[in-house]
Length: 131
Image 1: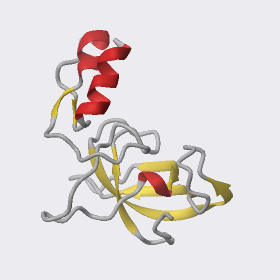
Image 2: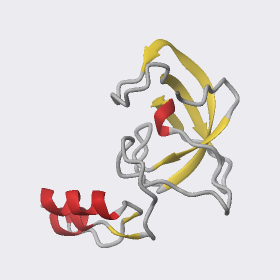
Image 3: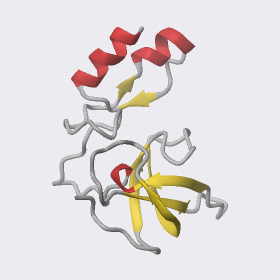
């Protein structure tokens, strides 16, 4: 079962969550629920809930980005140094994250050698097959 969240909770999320792509991992605060929306990621957790609005931590200018429609299965607690961090390539992957590396798919398809990811070896192999 997902950790039950509430408005005001601070959570960490992987890249490509809530329509924001610029960050690898970022911290955000839950602002409002989505009514009776349940998870659309098909995570298999019948208690997984979709939150309508979250705001990221303020940047250097105080600006906070809005995230929309984020499922609990995409949220995790602040990683402690002694905690294991999971691969962020897929919400279904439960493997440990690999050290940051360039994304082979983005390198090959988009000629992007600057975007980093932490996908595990299994997800990386899947990515290579997609190329």
